[in-house]
Image 1: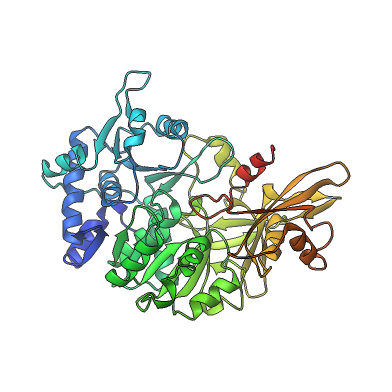
Image 2: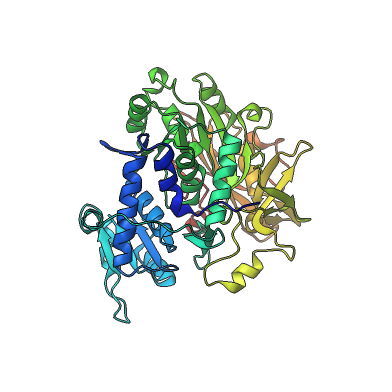
Length: 490
């Protein structure tokens, strides 16, 4: 099989086939594929003039913006490596990412992090290109250059994982990894060339980049880039741009559904709501069933670029709570422990400068160890049970917090829930739960515990329940369990 071409040639190929189609919408700016390719070629020439060579790193620090897309394609079109940086990280964490990947250039529109781009201890200045300033001047002052069709197995993107424990690791995503993942989405989501995708989830995460940005551009659709999620702005854009696909996490779509504008909003153009991070509750499925858009739920990880499992709309109700079946070019197996093992052309070969972590992440046969425990039914649908490290032992019995959270979510007045194990003198560990109640609910923590009686084995039932306004989640929608443990002094 002939390997797919390098990522850096995509804009040229799109400009050749659909030059006048709109590629990007950002505010009042609309960029066609021909215009995007021209800016990418000029930026590539400018970066080369600044000394960027194959294998060098070029980073981006800022919110969703056309500059992210342009920098990614220009960098990979030079045979260099793109490093998207998470603007939500603390200054010390961003400083670590910069020292770990040593980019030659950083494209930035985040003024609050400007001090991080000062000369390093070695005296080497980190060159910053400011969007709206030196970045645009570099593009305007450069002549378009040809882009490199990189080796498919060459490194294209270094993306730091969203894990919140231990030293951050950057997954080494190749051109082939990203392309095969995009093909998985194109096949399984049945993307069309006239898709209009509203993207307010941050592109510096693998989910937004791999599940929407790259597949939509591969098909020649339009990306509507938003700096952050806002309910009213979302509904305005859906109507104005005739959005066909939105990507987000369940809490985002629940927030939209609670808006006073939801009942009368024009959602007729929306085909799919692509959702990850957590299962969509049955009640939320029903809310959107009445409005038309269908949920496409999934499970993935940065190391798989990121798609692994997909739950199609046809099985959303019958297989509620599952993450679906493997993508077309993906293979999934369960270890004897229940851990999800992943194999496919979209799975990374390892982590940047982390040989020990890389070795530990794969089985002897080359399957990636996800760290997640799952169960599979006879039809091949996988239910993610929990993280291996989140399981706790109460009275000698393994307890899955995710299972308990799923039962809690079934309470008619509970809209979100989290559980962790806490030390106990008698049982070793017991559960502590946090619940978020729907607006106007009068249920108490004691009521929730009473409701669980008979619905869970005694050893699984949390010892204590705490009612809170909101639960901490990372940008991909996953519960921030370390933050919850820290709130208990663990």
